[in-house]
Length: 154
Image (cartoon, rainbow, N blue to C red):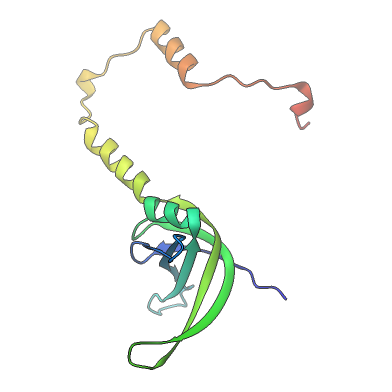
């Protein structure tokens, strides 16, 4: 039997982190994925419930929020329980083995800080760097790589 799920989508809400009685972390969230559009149809989406456990759950809670783009890999699970009104509720969800952070809230906050900290461009304030400044800047920004002849593909 094969039960494998791979999805890429955006979180519809902030992940909800809880702890089990023995202290294990569990986070749940919902991913939205747009369906392919046909001609003049309105855009439709699928909403898939996801659950992740332990350290990965803590990282998802720490680094992701509503709107974060994530990739998940896991297995499909269905279960049922009786709610407070005594009705049987059926749930199908993805139990994630791994979550890849493609766009996270920390990155968004960092980019927002960078955007607000930059000054407005004024062409009269620009000064051409001297040859030594250009060389120093180049040397500091680009790390050296040791490439052996055996590493070259052709």
